[in-house]
Length: 314
Image (cartoon, rainbow, N blue to C red; front, side, top):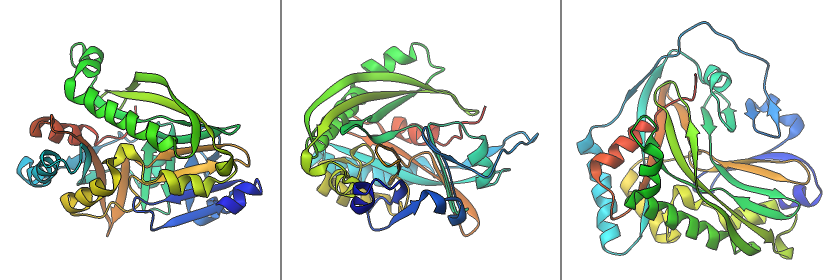
């Protein structure tokens, strides 16, 4: 990745959660490799898809008691001081009348990726952007059902959601400082509206920026190696929290919560691979979760995990 970016050669990359699998595609290789991409600055698809079928999505979440097992393990580690934020995720069986490819075409999102009929994602969350050697990150932490009364004010002022958002913003500000100077929070607690067929949501974002250190200029690989895994989908502090995540979840995230991105020869746009449906032995699973702090309540976190099982089709 460093070699290509220093040569200003455009490429698309995918990095899994544990940074064990990295795939790189030149622009001419994307479609022939079974990928389709729809980002702000690149669109590689096979055409336009249309259907008159009404979209159907059924989910079969684990019980609250099943969810409780990992949740309580996380809470135990939080109380011991081993972590102060853990992103706890689950894997939910779903059924839908559409294929992964059809979901790719019909979903509406800032970042969409179809990967070899193995998974599809429709992510609203930017990981990092690089423009003219200035780097930006946009942590997303905190969601609420938009139909609730005074939902925006409730989200902004909820003690647990605020603590979670403050923690991630501080973590990513520190992370960015490893590759950039003059790091600052440009915008704090911006609320975005996410419309879906199942349930409308509000999500809380912030923006952090900095100027790339000279030793990282033109080195996309070195930047990714330094910043990953993404703090917003892991927690803090990273090393111990990773141990807690792996033991509490009991399944492999794989590509889910990794990152993918497009380098156009000069600038970079990348996303966190969330809002994710994966095919496993012919069965579809939706992977979702949320940040757990010592203020988290079992019922609320269980509901948030279920709220995020949606496809933005409308």
